[in-house]
Length: 324
Image 1 (cartoon, rainbow, N blue to C red):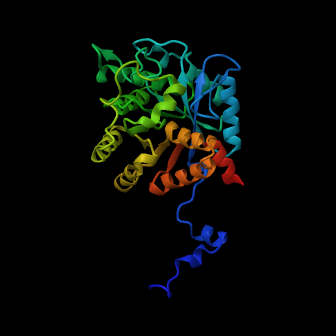
Image 2 (image 1 turned 180 degrees about the horizontal axis):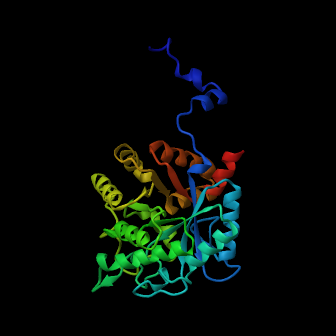
């Protein structure tokens, strides 16, 4: 039917109509909160480029985890800022390192909250790359054992899920085999399968102190111009044992989220990354935009594209708003 017999505005006339026919709805259950753990006690260092976020010692991580649970969030994901760095990222897989301590603290104090850990070496190597170096080149295969040891150490500390973000070929299979052999076959892997080389990571690298000391990450993170490659990467990780596939960043890659949703049958996670968050917050500080409305619209767009889970720095605020 055409106008005047058909009038699209009839069902937009009031809020109740709009609520009743809304196709995409955001839920607290969709959201995961990233947190940055640092050594010390009573430490809460503001992250300048990410207003409202901090590098936090374990006591403050626990406090924030409690707030996340009270807001109705199902999970957090932990990133570590270690006290030492070296060529072999030894603090990444040490049982007494910061992520492992933070996991134990949260699981002791907030046991019902799901704790996911980021598995990567970039924050722990003295060169800032996501794998070990050999003559100035990232040695993919030599990095796999260290990544698997890191994942295992997180799980032994109590992590409920591990999320490898390094983009080394074969790391999902190596982690899956290691966890299975050590009695952790029940632990799921959320793979950063489709992680693009992006300018949107800048604030995160400040927060995690993980910027590369030289070069860039284009030899292992994906080229922004590619989408077929995203399907290949996701398919390989599924075959290696991934349980959830992640796309990162989210907002500039909504087409990739949608494509994967139509082509694979695993849950899709998307990372609403630091640069996306910081741009909105900066715009609000300048008086140009309403960050709260932008964030809600952004998250709806990510969900509409097909994401089942969304990692977002706005998770607590959004969950509280959804509770109202």
